[in-house]
Length: 280
Image (tube, rainbow, N blue to C red; front, side, top):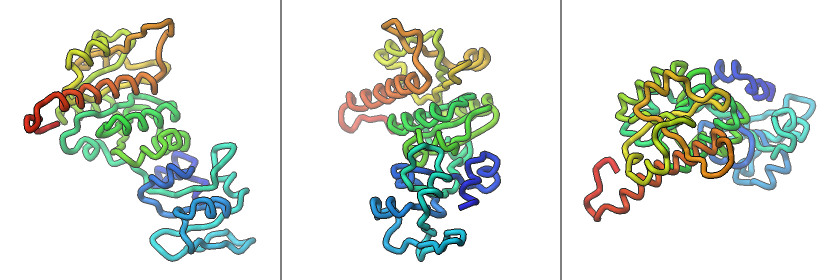
């Protein structure tokens, strides 16, 4: 369990290729699980997670004996759960998993139609929420570019609510290289900005959002840089009809991605049977 606690640190995650997942929903969705830690209460409440052959540590030893099967499952004390958790009220369910970063080329393989690029987004809660939104909207991948948060950060994992495991995730240090890779994959690059030239609502009604696209979102504090806005195929703004000054990153991403997904699916539904394009 000591090794699992160390995974709270980014350097340790990078060195081991593993990260810590907490919570029932996230653990149920997890892939690449190497070991599970459950409190006695959690094991009784969620029998599907541990099964009948959970190891019972004999104190005062380290508290881990591998149970038969493909991954070790260990019972831990409430105190140990508190040490593993980054929340005030842990659910007593933890998993050590292999990291999910598949690399830029793999994330863009095939013929993606909807890709999310988080450029320099450093807030883990926002990043995790956008990953969840991207998953719900049917996106093909999420790319974290530049000086962005580690998607394996505990808060990011929790905010994704399991979606981190549902679609390809990649990190890459160079934002321009990510943008270039998206273009090479046949994606139109749409950069979001409060001063964007294209109104999202009008674009959705006109059919301008139906083409395969990579949506660029910047950080809460600074947005997208002038160079990224200038180099995009189009800049898009979310219209504000009320008195709010702006939308936060996760909300703006949800509005944009659902507008794009809705435009695509509406176009498919409007076509006569047998006349769908090959890429729909």
